[in-house]
Image (cartoon, one colour):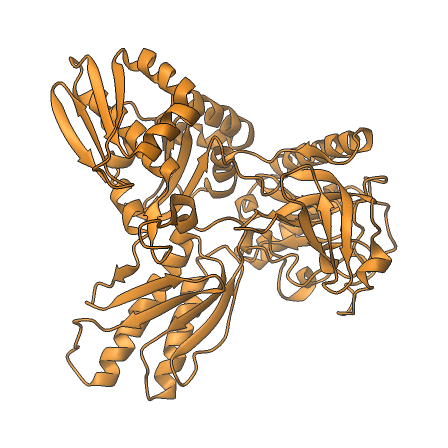
Length: 536
């Protein structure tokens, strides 16, 4: 299977696509005005303590206070699933890897940032947490990390259990734990890596060995460990000198995060269309992946990179309600405030044998496509899948197993129940950032929120890409004219005005923007002297 990472980078927006055999399987979008804060670390001050919810609000200096549950505080057992954020941050589920080296976690308070070495022991059995009011007080300063981005009207979800991912290891300064990614299957290799990390590790903190560590020599593992320990030392030092609320660590931007986490030996090449971004990637790769520098390539063609690799139409389809199956069946994906519902239908597929077999084949195909769509659309939270009803229990079990097998490719932590007699599957998928739908769209003002439109920033970004495309295809044109909805034109002038000036100088063409009352919110026209193209 051929894998590529395609990066489209502009001053306004960065988009990173992971392709498998030319098919888009993941898309990550980060805008200059909406940069991700997941993974950032803050010195916060406790605000309201809520005994009824067993939680507290923490002021970390953002518009909305962060929310921390008692299970994410220090001084008690680790929260369930702490080592299972995904397969890259997961402990070994059996045998020696399934144990902590100490009897409890040792979180980091703002006043004492470095943990003390505890007595050795095994993981504690599950127990009730002490009440939140006994664990944390108003105005107390604590060190916290963003576990989940703000979603909708909710502020960010926080945790006091810090984790710092490197290329080969994840360092957890608050616990004494040593785990190996489940994706490293060879028992001898697991043992070798565990012994290396055990030998090199300091007295404090824990480590998880990532999949990228497989086959690495001791020196490269040691270098990554030194990098993470130095990083944590800087965070602890800054925390000790700052007054709350204050940010003490900024996680990598989307480009370097993806290179760190997804640029494995399975990826054939990374292709980027921005020279400055390309240099940053090469510097990072030269430091952490020196053998992979030749796989980083620069794209310098007139055709936009996402058009060339046919990513753009796949992004457009990824927000459609209906997803068609090769057999002729289809899925309908609906998002509500509480959950995501996925309905499986046979459509025009009638099969060649009995009705039960037709339903089974559709459900088996749907199980694979459902997981692909969850990953592509970054759907999290509660998910209900309504498979086509089948009479035979053996067939229902086959669909359940097909769904479990498909989920093995998804690194995001999921939990699912067996398919019911009615064909329903309940599952949860960890949600750390907004879904693709919420990133690209907003509630429709034309239909009172019953549907979705592409948001103003999304349409504006499309227009800017079309301007670049027209400039490349019409070199002799002196002026490029844009007609769009007034809201979009206002956004371009108010939010992107400085960048528009830079774009004019770069393209050496005059840009003219006109509000058109007859154009829909998503519609626009971009025209140059030698050609014209409509969008929307």
